[in-house]
Length: 124
Ligand SMILES: [Zn+2]
Image 1 (cartoon, helix red, strand yellow):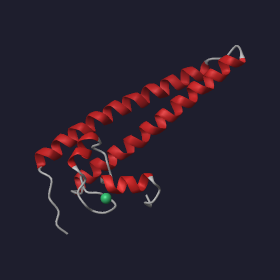
Image 2 (tube, rainbow, N blue to C red):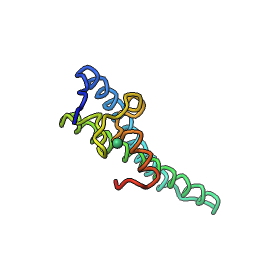
Image 3 (cartoon, rainbow, N blue to C red):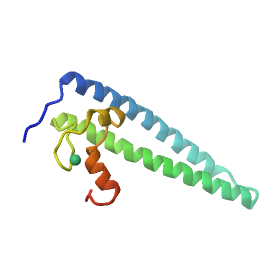
Image 4 (tube, rainbow, N blue to C red):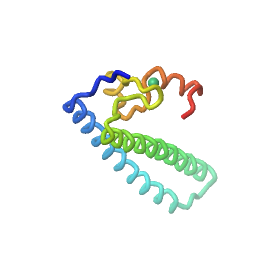
């Protein structure tokens, strides 16, 4: 298969982006852990408080779940850089569109496969 190799300079730029985002997310997860602890220590006085409390907890939880997921994708992207497969769709092996990588540098799939995955047509 013909593969257009990504230039080193471009790869470095993506790596920088990934590392910056990684730091941002790791910091956010840290803060969420902290906030989660504080929420747990609060003893609610009335049921309305309890409800909003559990709502906040749930919100924090889903946020950190999403953050953890992106963190995992970033780590995988960095690993693919080591392997020299960064920027290649993990599903079809075609290069991922540059526009897509610029918006989502940790993308695993090309736009086509991403669409299939979102429709549940791609085994992940
Ligand atoms: Zn693909």
